[in-house]
Length: 481
Ligand code: AMP
Ligand code: ZN
Image (tube, rainbow, N blue to C red; front, top):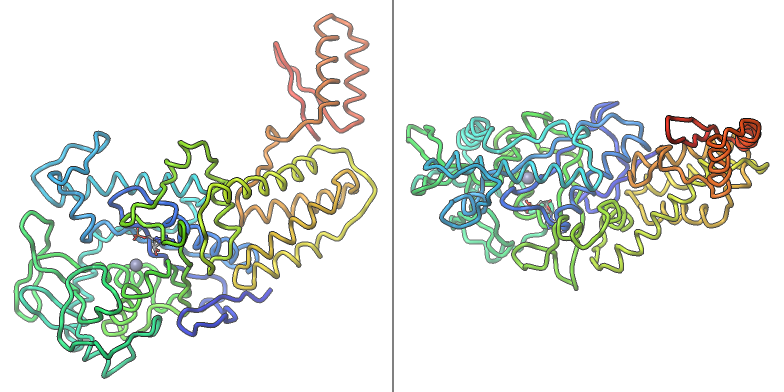
């Protein structure tokens, strides 16, 4: 099936062609680990997860998925300073070494992040690697040196800047997001990791050492430099190391288009002479009352917050995946509740498929599968794909299907669950019909009363309905076969 994906470079939905025939290489900008991720952040990781799972299931590809961890930037440095009061008792004791502190502080949030994405159905084993920025300082220094030697960087006051004016003479800057260069001030430098389009100027590749902050040393153009890399550099260096250039798809939230991804393109091209990726894929914001969910606005919920309120993390996954990734998701509790109902409706259908006796109606599951996968292959249109699933679930009674149709349907739902990952097929979770439970109970009582004949009769009755009883010392288990 042809897979189509929106590309932020062309601003169109394009037919997807992998570079390598069998394997798709994906890089996702991962979390900045200075605190717990909020569910707005989660949307970007759920989107990347949906993409990689759909490529596997619908596209039949193998996937190599890398997600970096930003463990050094303005925020991680700020919050890992013990005097700023962000350490908690579960972290190891602060030391006098800023780098040790940075690592201990961020390692705590890395572990929490991996637990959190696990709770919303992102499998750690699906991610090839979570490389950390501080483990790749050498690679970043190497890239700065290449950019400098190619004439696109300069040193000023112990910092190294990317020369955007020089770059614009050579290649376009502003490929992902239109930039108004009217206000562009040649040679104006910006040191912050995050800045707006209005502030477009020379961005920092290497920041001069600051008192009480982690630093590394290197020599550039015979000058001794001490300090740490700028934020944008890490992704350019790590994607080159782990995925080769160009790789297939780069993901992130729309806020990363500028400056982060624009700067990534410039760095990669100025240093390695090549664009990082073929497809840039960005998910829209998760919002609260029309405003981006963000730590700085204070309008955020972490997974913990929602778990404390009694929400099931898989309902959160399902709610977010139910919305198309390129439309804004307006977060409300009602939204999570109605996603929960939808998820349960399909779960009940699956439970019945697994436990009900068979009927006579035969259906063509291939057709259903085709309808659902066609929507998923069309730029991951989950709302339309799920609409197909719901209309099927609403229209059919499981008790009508013959055995072959049932088996095919179960296989299909299992396969679909390799994408949505919100349903269960465990036998223990299969709903045993009340009638069967009552019969099993009667048989157990007969057995306890040593009425072997009755116990035997009921066992046969249960077998004819497709259930077996497994006795243990003081109890029994009902097994569907
Ligand atoms: P950060 O931890 O800030 O580096 O962000 C990690 C990812 O979350 C990035 O891909 C961001 O674009 C994304 N992100 C942050 N806030 C939101 C939001 N409200 N909705 C969707 N994605 C977001
Ligand atoms: Zn990045």
